[in-house]
Length: 261
Image 1 (cartoon, helix red, strand yellow):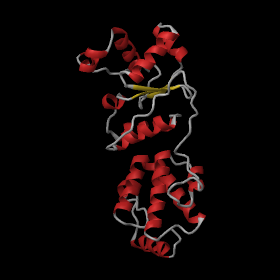
Image 2 (tube, helix red, strand yellow):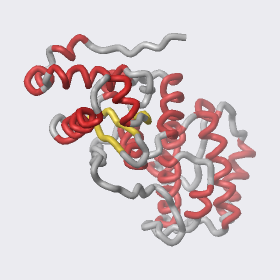
Image 3 (cartoon, helix red, strand yellow):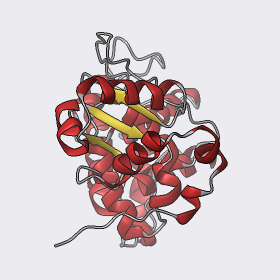
Image 4 (cartoon, helix red, strand yellow):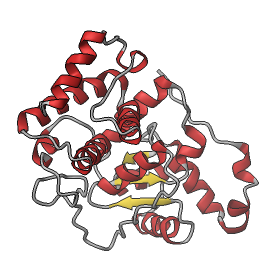
C-alpha cells in the first residue's frame, strides 16, 4: 500500500521560506516532511546515518542543517538520546478533527519516547492557549532525558495520595496528569479518596473509558466534572454508550457519601 504526504503550494511563496531558506534548506525541509519515517504526529524516530543515506549529504552537512533548522529557522527539535525529530509546524497542515484520525493520532503520540516532545504534542492536540516549544537537544551535548510526567507519592507537587498507583496504571501520560488534577480537586472540596482500593477502582474505570472513547474524551469528562463541582465522573451515553438507571445513580451517590468512591 502506497503512502503519500501532501505539500501545500504555498510553501514556495511563504515569506519565511522565500526570505531565509537557501536552496539546500528547501530541499532538506521537504525531505523532513516527506521521508518514509514520517507519521501522523509529526514526531518520528530517525538516525543521522539514515538521513545521510537518504539525502546523499555528508554527516557534517546534516549536523549543520539540523542546527540551522533548530537555532535559526526554529521549525524543528531533535533529540539525540531518543533519535527523534519533531516538526513543529506539522500539525498545521496534516492534522484533522475527524474522530478516526484523532484516535490514530493519540496512539502515535503515546509512542513518542522523548517526554518533552510528547508533552508538546498533547498540548497542541488539546488546543492549549500557550504551548511551549520543546528545547532542541543540541547534537554535540549529552543530555539525560527525564520523564517529567512520572508521578509518585513522594515527588507529586500536588500532595495528593495515589501517585504510585496512577504511575503504575495503563493510562496515557496526559490522562494521568488529569487524574492527579481530579484527586487534588477532591481534596480541595474536602472529599478525598480514603483508601487505595477506591483509587484503584477509579483508575480501572478510567482505563476502560480511555480504551473505549480515547484520551481526549476522557480528559473532557474529568474537566467537566471539576468545572461543575461534581464529586464523581459521569460518563454520559454519548461517551460511555450506555445509560445509568435511577437506581444506578442512587447507588453511586450513596457510595460517594460513604467515601467509597
